[in-house]
Length: 226
Image (tube, rainbow, N blue to C red; front, side):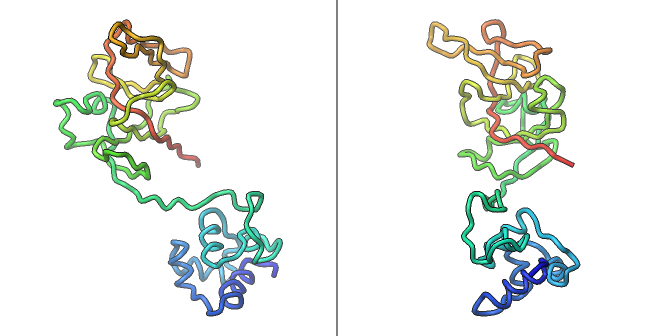
């Protein structure tokens, strides 16, 4: 069986005790029935990524065989097999997208939370959903790891640890995004820390010299690739 169409028909019609319908496969993979029709007709000659993984799991066949024809459909999947991804079935949760001024006021009485910059969805499951929000990176202070246009998810209900990436506010109405580095403790045993940019061309802020409030800790980082 040299084509995806042949292998797919074999997995749907020959291997199972009862033939599997195209609409059943479409529902399992999360695509529309015309997409399955294209695979079966040969119009679409490849199946990749999550579609491949879901189809192979639903049909109970080896994903490498389904994609390439190499091996047997009943070969056991292994770590060295074609697929190196797994399904993420964590439910999505809607969160607000804030600008850096709104983030600077987050948790303050001055922020009413009524008019966020926008809304987005995340799979992050924090203990307090109302304390989770998203920001879009601006500027180059955290380059090269974080670039303008990248999105981050912030949880304001958790405390920073050494090395955490945090959103903080230092007395202005605008927040900043930096790395959290502990440098000591004051006479009350409270952590003294620095907010460190990853780009050395930007200044480091110290809690010994500035009144800094930690707003939240970054828990997810997203970047679009085109």
